[in-house]
Image 1 (cartoon, helix red, strand yellow):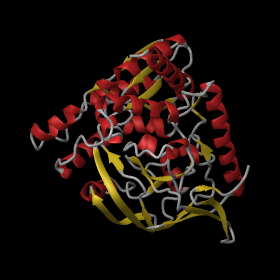
Image 2 (cartoon, rainbow, N blue to C red; image 1 turned 60 degrees about the vertical axis):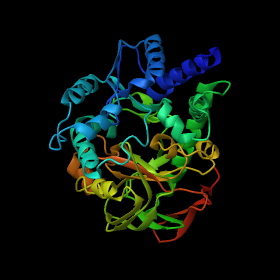
Image 3 (cartoon, rainbow, N blue to C red; image 1 turned 90 degrees about the horizontal axis):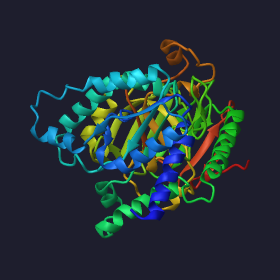
Length: 420
């Protein structure tokens, strides 16, 4: 490890702790079960730097739930076919113990996008559905922003080889790390100040959209003609600045380029075509489209992974409805890199996106302490999944629909169509 790389890795870890999580003195930190699997053991160098950074700001204890993604593949290849409803519930109960104490939670993504390629889609879907079901107690905390949590990334060889297939193996890892550092503003002269300026811009975009009070969004692009209704009390915000129920301002995703809100669960109509592949639990779903009527997916099509996509939208009653709308300019640093990361954390911040499943309660004004049935009555979707997929491109146009049905430009050619 070169001195320069070691310094960048330390800076990155500091950003994750101070900007992503904003860990407070006395808080504990658990790394692990935020994306339905443990922390990949190959990400250990970054995890160790995060632990050091957390202790420096006053963390009381840092604990890691390790995982080995290869074990998922081994399970699919060799485990009894009737065993895929099994799940390590101790991981969930252990994580919930931290969340009940208002401690911090961090997920580290760094995995092989093709890990489960060629495996039985029924078994893959069953394994994912089982994990998602048991994950609900954790999702109930993260979806309502009960505590400060975040997701960041670490390069691993299999992921690097997928993103940079034409490079020599020794160059693939360094190139992926540099792409991660660039996307997360590690290379800026003052990374924390750069993040603050970026967050301020996202907040300003959200404030503009909140002032407009659009009743719906209309999306148009090749293969896409979609209208998404918005609840009356919807709230836009930049994901760079979220305040948890315990009063800690944090950044749920690093990197982040989006402003987001919640759609009305019953008011999505039309067809939308994904602009990037979706990596779902180690399986790629590619060249896919969804058709909506009355807010629900009524038709799916995919060149690759269609069976898994069908199983995904049938996970529960709310899985085939939208839980998030997010706007990202095509000129974002991640899009500007021209890289396809095959990783939702990065690819969703290169393009406007939607999410199937659970809506975030904080995206509804007055939702603090709101019961689930009240949230549903206001238009908020509920599900045991929350899966983002990318739809934006340089050909995307987005309009806001006013009370009188007029259309006002929000995005043109994938870029913001209004000035601040």
